[in-house]
Image (cartoon, rainbow, N blue to C red; front, side, top):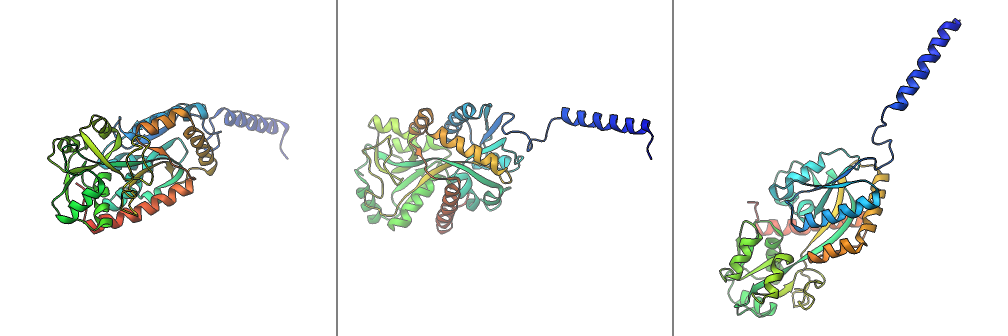
Length: 330
């Protein structure tokens, strides 16, 4: 039987331990989320569409979640560096990735060895936006319409040259898809970036280009480039008078970049639900919708599961194009 003194000492130790435990911070998973700043990794340099979307989304999410939401640009290797950093981050909801078709669907089939598995490393949070490309030719070109382009491509296989910002980029794959669907052959001319590619199209050194809309739009407005097709399923709000490629006669053609927010696999379901609800509200704000419109994009409807299914479908689609065309990364 314990003496009263021993019992008192034991009681004091228990009380002290309880007080110490109460004073210590709880593990992140046990705290109410979010309890600290949230980080969105953008796997590209500042200034592009990914960055524009992320920064406006961060502003809106910060207001909705009540904590600071930061944008962390991690460019390199076509988005691989930043995507890998996100994949290897703790699955606690405090590190997210702004992913898109390129990083989540194309890179996994374009690059033979990636340091992450896009399918198993991430879980979807919410879809964000979809952005088509615009097919442009120089204003001096005899190609006046998409029908003209097809006719010339069929009449002289391999003669028409199309520029892109590099091997395996959206503009390159859009051109390869056109060849596949239309049954034509063109010459691909890769550049190191959109700006030099557009410069040579403007100068007439290259016949055409599938370009992201913002850098091409000023030249279209100035009459230096002629827009002859939009690659998406719908016309662009920035170029409402330009028909889609499908409307112009190539049924079944569509090439767009879909953007969405993803998190490291293992992120708690409750956190994903809170994040998904917040993103859905953020997408409805005029500020974020204006950011989308400025980049020639539109909100992408659907659920987190829909976005995951879309990435799988896009991976299958572009994987086929990459293998058929024998495309290799630069």
